[in-house]
Amino acid sequence: MENVDNLVLKLFEIEALKFGSFTLKSGIQSPVYFDLRVIVSYPSLMNEVADFLWQAAEKPNAKFVLLCGVPYTALPLATIMSANHNVPMLIRRKEAKDYGTKKMIEGKFKPGDTCLIVEDVVTSGSSVMETADSLSKVGIVVTDAVVLLDREQGGKQRLEHKGINLYSVCGMSGICKILEKHGKLDSPTVKQVDDFLAKNIFKPDTSGVKLTEQVSKKSKKSLRYHERAEIVAHPLSKQLLKIMDSKQTNLAFSVDVTKCQQVLELVDKVGPHVCIVKTHVDIIEDFNDDFITALQKLADKHNFLIFEDRKFADIGNTVKHQYSSGVYKINQWAHITNAHSVPGDGVVQGLKDVGLPKNRGCLLIAEMSSTGNLATGEYTKATVKMAEEQADFVIGFICTSRLTDDPRFLHMTPGVQLSAGGDSLGQQYLTPNIVIGDRGSDIIIVGRGIYKADDPSNAAKLFKEAGYEAYLKQSVDFTITEQ
Ligand code: S5P
Image: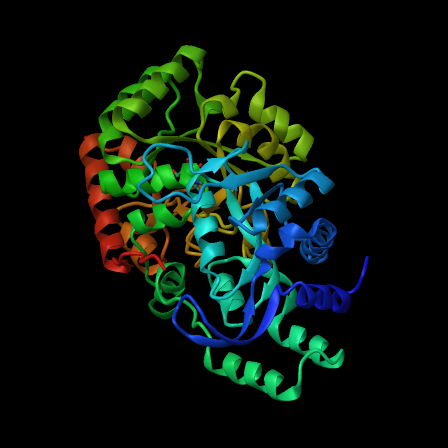
């Protein structure tokens, strides 16, 4: 493999790197212009560039199972990388937004797949962002992009701001140094480029996800559900946030009763007020497959997701079977399940193997509501890290307060009643206002507060109103603006 100096010299030779006075698309005068389109006429150079790109992304261990080149110049480069390294490719159409119902992304993928974006030149980062937006709209996760030439005008920082790491083969100042060293550029030209760079930096975007951070970090407020629904990549999180938005509820009903009929009757009454129904199917005495069919019908009728609170806590190979076989076959019907992080991330990997193909999501138990529990401090922090590393399947946490400002993760809090207190076995209760308003959680999980009430439907309505009111107070409404 030749070194970067040789590559830069070759690009200069074929006039892919030009110095002089150029008017850019934005109207700005620039002393340098990168035109990588010409490389299609130099096949062996294209191969070299593709190798450099691969190495730049591979060295820092970018995570991806798919590649997508930004149209058009990077398309052939991504194609070479794909063929040489046997990584499947996607093509993003470049047609107008009103292209109708035609697919914007061509190629095979499943929700949660990770994709590396390949680009020839990055200036502000907006082309990479547009491609990332199109990919995330269909559930593909983009955390990394690789570029041949970074003009060092703030694109890297802007992308980082949106959660995308940018790796580059070379940057504008490095290119100048190399060309100067080899006598291709004089020092006044290099100075001109330096001056240009100092004056022409694109500032990080202050809308969208950036504002998410500002909102949550500065005021501890969060985004409205409909705005988060636009940002999250997992289709299930999207669906859940849309339900929360349209039904105006952050209430999950924990239907911890022991007969199928009881469960179904309660769920039919409470369904209109909830976004999730949470089950413990192993406490149901007369569990059978018809029960699941009936529960699914109620989920369709009332528009909620089903969460089986199985709390998996074994090695990956065991939980994989516990999740998909036996009497309950949880992965076949529960949209969401949960796991303890204590076995290490193998537990998530095992569940993911049989959950992700069915578009399921998992919550990690980062904190618990019961007195004396050990899920605190470093354990909680390590659990959040595990979720971040497995964000294609982990959609959030069971917790007692907001643990991260990352809007992708949904925080769900059990131990909720209309007044604070506890039971005789260590359960501790907080109110919806404390959980959602003060502690910044997203969803309240209520069991006995509803199913033990004289009128469960009315009790659910009261929880729903209290939770939603607290959410309206602690969230900020703004519209994500496109770049
Ligand atoms: O820490 C926890 C985690 C969970 S998932 N504390 C909990 O109480 N839960 C579950 O939430 C618990 O298993 C039960 O199903 C529900 C709380 O029920 P409640 O009757 O106390 O509201």
